[in-house]
Amino acid sequence: MSELAEPFSMSQPAVSRHLKVLERAGLISSGSDAQRRPRKLEARPLAEATEWLEAYRKYWEASFARLDSLLSELKATEKKRKRVAPKKR
Amino acid sequence: MLFPDSFKVSTPSDREIRVIRDFDARRRLVFDAFTKPELVRRWLLGPPGWTMPSCEIDLRVGGAYRYVWRSEQDGSQMALGGVFREITPVERLVATEKFDDAWYPGEALDTTVFVETGAITRTTITILYESQEARDTARRSGMEYGMAAGYERLEKLLPTLTGEPT
Image 1 (tube, each protein chain N blue to C red):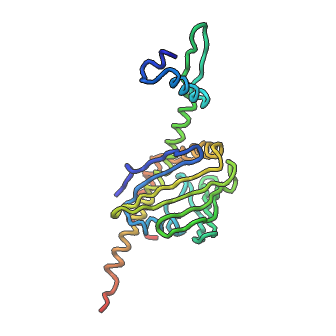
Image 2 (image 1 turned 60 degrees about the horizontal axis):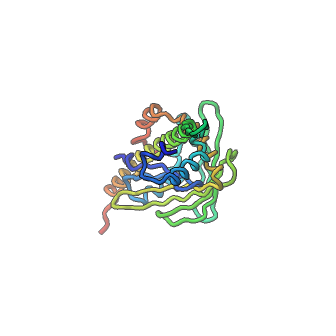
Image 3 (image 1 turned 135 degrees about the horizontal axis):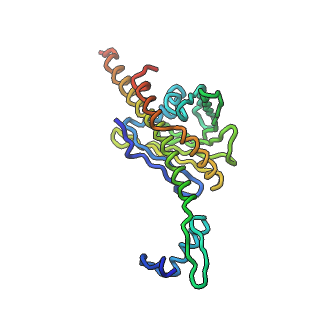
C-alpha cells in the first residue's frame, strides 16, 4: 500500500479507497503474503473496454464519413438549384 | 471537407454513451440527413457488406421510425425502431430505440442535439440505456458489429458514394 501510494500526493486512506473501487470493478486483484497485499493489474477487462470503444468509434466514423460526403453533395445541389432558379422581377 | 478531429465517443454516466461530431454544413441539412428516409439510407448503412433496404420515419411526436439492415453475404436481417418523444425542428430529437431481437433488456432513449456555429453543425447523440447492464451488453455486441467495419472496406466504399446522384 505505501509503495502504491508513494508516487501520488494523496493520503494512504485515499489511495486505499481508490484501490477498493478498482478492485470492485474487477480491474485489479489483491494477493496476500505474510506482510503485504500486492495488487495485480487485471488487464483483460481494461483491454476489452478499450477494444469495444475503438470498434464503436470505427463504426460511427465510417457512418459519419458517408454523411460528410452526403452533406457536401446536398450543399452542391442547393447551390446549383439557386443558380438555375429563374430570377423573379 | 472532413471533420474527423471533432469526433468523440464517451460514457458520461453508467447508463449512457455519447457520440459527438462536427459537420461542415448548416444544421438544416444535417437535420434532414438524420430525419428524411431517402437521406438516412445513404449513410446509416451498418457495417460494410450490409445495406438498408427499408427506412421509415414518421417525424412527429408519437410517430414511429423503423430501420432494417440486411447482410448481402448471408441475407440475415437486423431491425431497429422506436417512437419520437420530442421534436424541435433542426435543433433536437428525442426518440426511443429498440432492436427487434434485442440482446439487451429494455428500450434505450436517444437524444440528438444539433448546434450550429457559423456554417458548422455540432451533433451530439446521447443514448441512455435502462441500466448499466443493458448499456454494457449493447456495447459488447457493438464491438463485434464494429469489428466487421474495417477501414479498408470503408475506403473502397467512399468513392462510390461521393457525387453519385440520388
